[in-house]
Amino acid sequence: MSNENKYKRVLLKLSGEVLMGEGSYGIDPDTINRLASELIEVTISGVELAIVIGGGNIFRGNMGTASGMDRASADYMGMMATVMNAIGLQDALERQGANVRVISALYIKEVAEPYIRRRAVRHLEKGRILIFAAGTGNPYFTTDTAASLRAMEIQADIVLKGTKVNGVYTADPVKNPDAVRYETLTFTEALTKQLGIMDATAMSLCRDNDMPIVVFDVTKAGEMLRAIAGESVGTLVKEA
Image 1 (cartoon, rainbow, N blue to C red):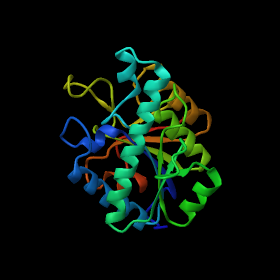
Image 2: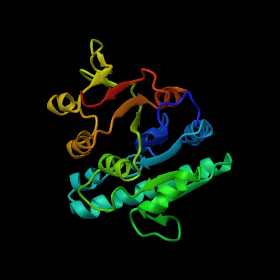
Image 3: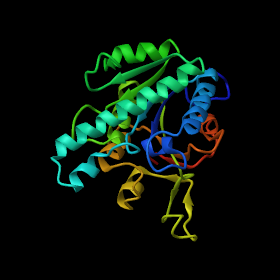
Image 4: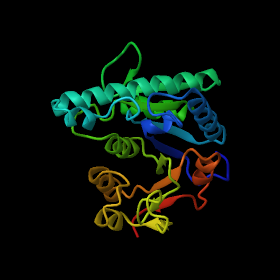
């Protein structure tokens, strides 16, 4: 690992919306190719990288429930959307020469490996990029919770949450120009103030297992590498 990196093993949580670029649906080719290039830079620097990806650019479980669908059925559809995103990201990474494994919490052996913790860790040790798909494999749990859970299981050093905003603010910075960005927060503060960084289950998991989170703008080139180097990027959430 490069001496410039503070963290050796990183869990990156990506929302599906990040893959849309400036679009309103699906995967933007330029965006996913740019993202793949940056992810490869991260691994070249010596970091072991695992990714949990959402599916909101295709389908979210709450979209289905809002229209009257059964919650479990809608959530399973959302999990399948994350598999589609994972395969798309895998393709973009492999076209640029990366060694990648998609690991699914749902059993879809034709396109992804089943989740086995020890095998996943071994892939990381061999320098492969992991993409965890299908959340936890259970309805009623978000991909944020999946990211927290997988981070604990693979013994990651930190969770990086890549968004389209450069951190956590006191209010929506798009709607409120006076909103102020937090440089650091405790988990208790984030939960008490209901800042929406992750859902309460995910935040509690990280708090109880002393897993720090950095919320940063993944659309800004170089921010991910800066975060991994331990620079002041976005908002750092940790226990005091």
